[in-house]
Length: 221
Length: 237
Image 1 (tube, rainbow over the protein chains, first blue to last red):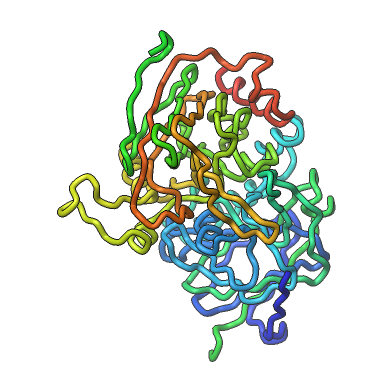
Image 2: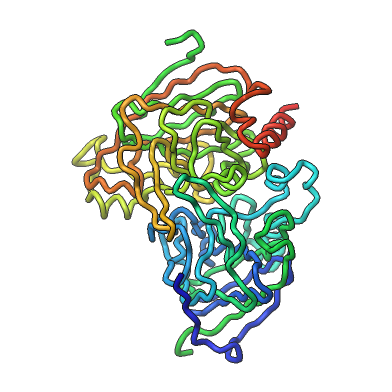
């Protein structure tokens, strides 16, 4: 796997926030800006969606992204393609090497199917997504996001290989403390993150931990 | 026609079809000529924000292909429909849909004005037009299934269209576990290397079927599906 460190220094970032496990993060990133997500303690799944900031119907599409590059895994060079066929962002640095976009986000309902009917009470990414978009509507009246806007997402730092026999396997993470992935926004985008609270499988090493989110201005600014 | 059959019809090459497939019926899709692709998306007709969910379908069953025994899950932990018959063993749930840009680049422009109903159509726009008839729009687009197509994934993730996956007469049957708004088009698979615009037709057979029995192959194919069927049955209780 090819690893690509970034040349950007944390000291020059214009925004930095730590997102605890089980919390969402929603933020606009302008065209040309860089967004880095740091897996502070390792093996933490970061469920992420991108929207065209001016048209939320034009949003991240997992199938269009993997179809456009004819490859299942996301890493440096991957263009994150929208449902309208536009590049939302490009992965420009990646010290983890491989990210998933087939596994989707956990939900209370899918947890009941996958683990046990009694798991309904457990916190899940799609509850975090819904909470974040409700709050976003209060911050930006009229810019409404609903459940139907929660498309199939990216799982940064998650390792979900497909076998030649067509099996989907959830492998131990290949991420480690301090690994990061960085994207450059190719248009003004709204970024929606759920720092995954899943406790039923190894995607967070059974111990969900915080992440850091940093933003740098566009090159030359 | 067997006595359970309600009706049959054909989706012409490159055309689109939609129907609310009722619980208690099944849809058989037949690749009459071989090499067809039937792109499909599914919604709970009573509440269309509940819809086919690719990741939930794949991760519940640890699969990256669909075949007999597979369940197609909604985002609400319920089974929209399940694959009760399959003569070929592999249908693609990951390769997605073509769009106007891809079709023009691969096959060139062909407008209705010059080509009449042989004009070039793409899967994305076809889905959107059909969804519009049910009051749904771009925000309701969701990852689709491609029946009769297969995409192989190598160890490094490279995706390759598998040639000759489906021969003439191949068939797959979907049993509706809910009342499912089903949208299907026969546009070519987006990764099909065929250089010409050559979509193929499929024949549809809609028939009455009994509900999933306690020993049903889809229900028992994994413990996850047993729970998925329980949650689906509770919805109707």
